[in-house]
Image 1 (cartoon, rainbow, N blue to C red):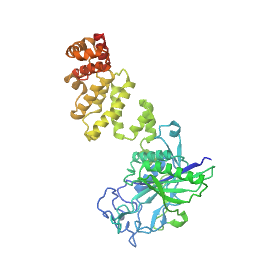
Image 2 (cartoon, helix red, strand yellow):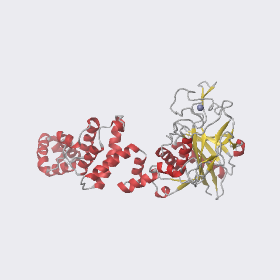
Image 3 (tube, rainbow, N blue to C red):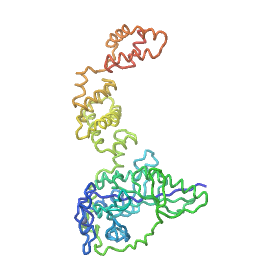
Image 4 (cartoon, helix red, strand yellow):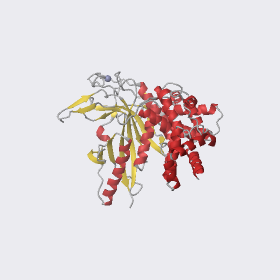
Length: 494
Ligand SMILES: [Zn+2]
């Protein structure tokens, strides 16, 4: 009997606001001095009162609008009560029954599988809350210190419906959400830095009913999201096959051993004693009648740039790229801008084979140029090649004026020194030599100078021919076409 896994995600993301959620302290995730950005409000001193950061509300509404969520007219904040040393108030200001965004969906647009791309993951809600401080455990395990720089930083929480069925789907969802948050400019959403954190809930059942829910926490990479789910599916399947009962619990992920382990039994919502935050007013977010709400949704919509899945479709069809190729571009904005300028250059001249040029440009950009930039640690801003000169190089290649070997050499030279590819080609005499009249003198010379190899060739040694071609390639500094050389040698030696 097969067991069907059902998976939901809970994602937290730190917002990129100037100040914290309820006070004027700086929100600086890069701050290295502990307890620098703190004040009586975020340290929960008696008598202090929170003030809402309007920008944070706007950012979460933006996410909701991008996901096609409903933005209710009214919203409010609630207290979620629990004790933990990194939570000075003894409660977290969060949202319970009136979140900023309800419903919505995110397509699995980063998948290369057409069926998966069309799958839209339903969102339950997106709300706003505050982050906690950070515990720093001493090396000897005897003491723990607390850094409150992060306490009170605006934190978005997004919850999906339990509609995913594999680790891969969950990973694609999280990667897509990260790209959306970055595109909207509201969070860096770097998982390694804890700016985006995923929790998984997973249950297995034979029929459409849901089984016992297990939660997996502390997942700080996309790989961990996928692998921990795959592990849990395996673990729970084996247990259910032996007719063991699954415990409702929270499990952690051991990234080294690649296993989940039991942490604690799961709390229920009622354990937190949620109640409306008495120090904050109910919020009139927007109004269908004119402008008596806090926000004008139409104005926020106008600020939303092209969404990543829209961009993917546009460049896929516009440039005739595959899904994998388009993914490279939508995940690297600077590469994308460079590529678009290169293609623009193609459009400005008469090009025999535009399709071939675009595909060459893609290859030289994503493997050769990116490779050179990585090995020399060059950033886009410091790059000496302009998109126009890069386009000219691709045109030389596309029109068969230079061989691909020479193309790579010229590219390396341009990365080093800048300059126009045509000039580099002429100065260094790298133009492709393919005419018989140009190649014959070189071939005669090589035959004359290598009598031993010629003998070997005549005895039928295949690599003798390769040696001769290699000699000729060296002589022409890679400018000759190896295929034509081979033909010519065969002709001369037959
Ligand atoms: Zn503060």
